[in-house]
Length: 258
Length: 70
Image (cartoon, rainbow over all chains, first blue to last red; front, side, top):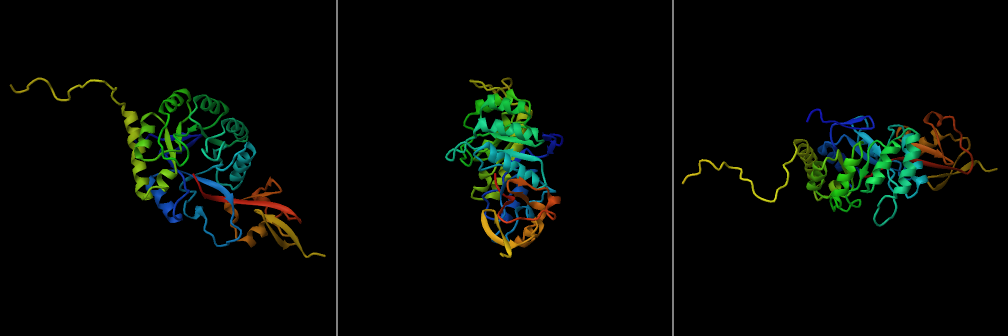
């Protein structure tokens, strides 16, 4: 699949797996998991510098921004103002124009506040950001985000960190048929088959963090996810057989011994 | 006459010398300039302004960087 690049807002990615950098044991494990996953794009969070501990290590000493596309998120933002402010700060750090836009609606579910998301996306697109919105599995919202000018849509499979897999595959399928921008399934992937299913459905990529970082062996799971995304993509491109209720023999009828 | 100025940096109140610039503040905090962003009284600063922006008493700063996240 040499020429099967994923392009999001002009950014070309060889890998269709996008991974997070949170929840790892240490920066070294983060680095190794990301390397094994084969991902080209990694998400990061925007947080206050630790001003107490001067010698604290920096994530970007382990994840080289020359090698990986850094995708800052607005995780933890519950209002349009917070999300826009966080995105602007991320941009001011000077390494990217990309933002994974999150406007969270509720602490318990971490579901997106889609009304806030649309409003924040409008502001940021106008300011020249490449906006990758974390959204609900709602085709109407996805369509609106595309119309605003978002570079892709990133519907959740299930709540962040839940590992439940794709809870509403039919909606994800409708989203895929509704928008022309890339569809990245973001959040809720628990294991390799979840990622493969998303890709088999024709989604353009999968973004995950906990599914890898929370596994008993994150490095091994990173590898599993790499192959799952590949396998799913290959199967989608190959075109699966239609499902049928009854059998259809694989071996010829002729020449059976009597 | 107080000799220093009070700044609120990332929510922490601290005393600094008068005429401290943003660049000097980052240096004192041991923060590399290239991977951070600075907001001064809710206004984001351009990096090229760090060395010429002199901080005043009671200024509020947010200094951010990238950490692990999903």
